[in-house]
Amino acid sequence: MPKSRVYDFSSVLRKFPGFPCVLVTTENNIITIGMVHIFSFSPPLVGIGVSPRRYSFNLLKQTQEYVINVPHKNLLTQVAFCGEKSGRDLDKFEKTGLTKQSSLVVKTPGIEECPLNIECQVRKEIATGDHTWFIGEVVAATIDTNYNPEEAILYWGGYYRVLGDIIGKRG
Image 1 (cartoon, one colour):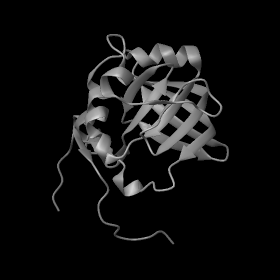
Image 2: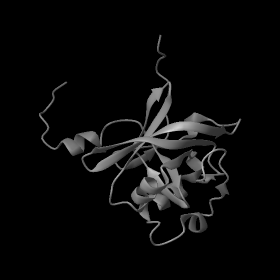
Image 3: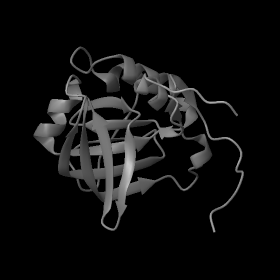
Image 4: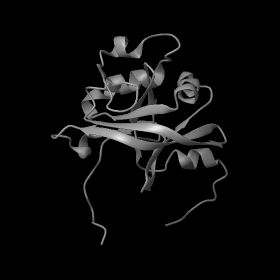
């Protein structure tokens, strides 16, 4: 298969497969995040990449906590809305009809409609170019017993996607 040398690395990174697309809450705001990653299983650390230009950036710096809310594909309209609009200008809970859910440990509310809610307290911030990674320790989580990860939304290359076929298993 022929390959060509690439000089526009940002275009290559947009082809990188499988970014989960989540709704992150901090204080009373919701931001759609496509840069989310597990950094450690023990202790459980999950990070989110946020641009300093985003309204949520300063909220995260102030509160030092967030909730990662994993939406299912039926929430795509709300996911897109929260990624296109700023919490500086409007109340995203009100505009999307999403319901605040009291968290178990952190003060930040989760989103009731999301089947998986992961509460995090920031343990480290790492500035990495145009985004800062907020690495959070998982301090509590709730999961819908009917949660199907195959209905989770992925994002890359400018498209929202869902998981495809399983083609193999590790080990």
